[in-house]
Amino acid sequence: MCILDTIEKWRDEGHKVVFTNGVFDILHVGHIHCLEAASDLGSKLIVAINDDESVRSLNKGPERPINSETDRAKVLSALSCVDLVLIFSEETPIEAILTINPDVLVKGDDYDANCTDTEDPKYIVGSLEVKKNGGEVQTVSLLPGHSTTNILKFR
Image (cartoon, rainbow, N blue to C red; front, top):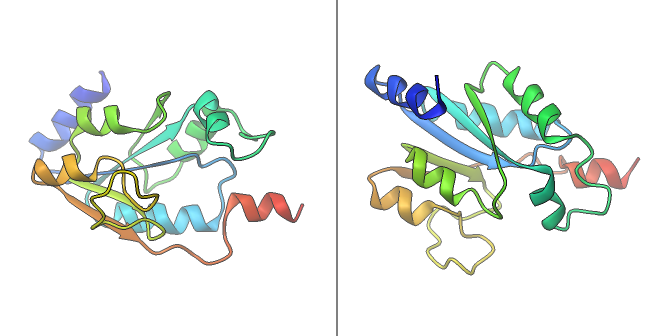
């Protein structure tokens, strides 16, 4: 069954589809906190992850990603709060968001759910489109000091 068939089946069953995205290179407690909070905003959570090439284009560091896209997807898929993982290769997940049309789009609170300036670093990619289609955009709190960048800085 293709991903879109799965999502359509979920909607037919009355599920509220939540979408979030990120690199999720070295999974840590901050990621778990955000994923569980995102999952609580609906009944099915889709997590889109950057493919290896797009991670490199984000300038997160010369050795990033540490874990391959396949490994990152497998680890995320094993979490009980995650219902589906997909890998995207574009600079942003906008195509996935437009295709899936989630009921809720979620990012960490280092973004602004009300920002409409697509050039602002706090803008959530896809938020205008999700709201236009009747969906909602939410942020979830981050755990201070918990980031992959911090983990790598102190190793």
